[in-house]
Image (cartoon, rainbow, N blue to C red; front, side, top):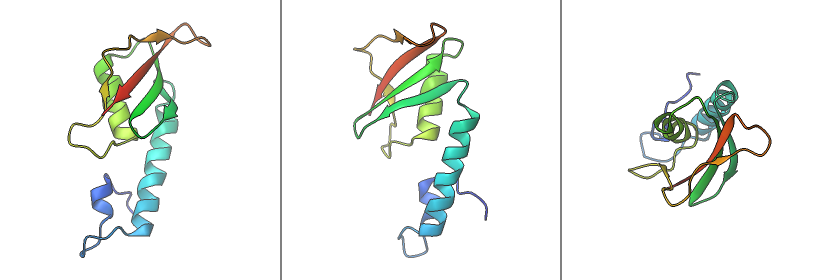
Amino acid sequence: MKYPDSLDECRGPDGTLDLEKVTAWERRINEERVAYAGELVFLREKLLGVQVCASKGITIERVVELVNRLNPAGTRNGWVIDESLAPVVCADDSGRLHYVLVW
């Protein structure tokens, strides 16, 4: 089965979610998370916010792009960086920064 690119592609003709397609979509997301782990790791995932640990070598735009790809918010605008919280240097690796994103 081809992995769906979005949750919308997991809907059947009647608009309900197809469990097999949703499972395939989740599998694709998990495989991509492993592939991008060098750039970005999810630390916390809550309903209204996400905290990630990202390599200092990637841009804020790339952080937002990856978070929206790997953990779609389900909103029109997706996740955005919380400007009220400055990035924090990771306590475990000074070559990485922690970001908080909200929707």
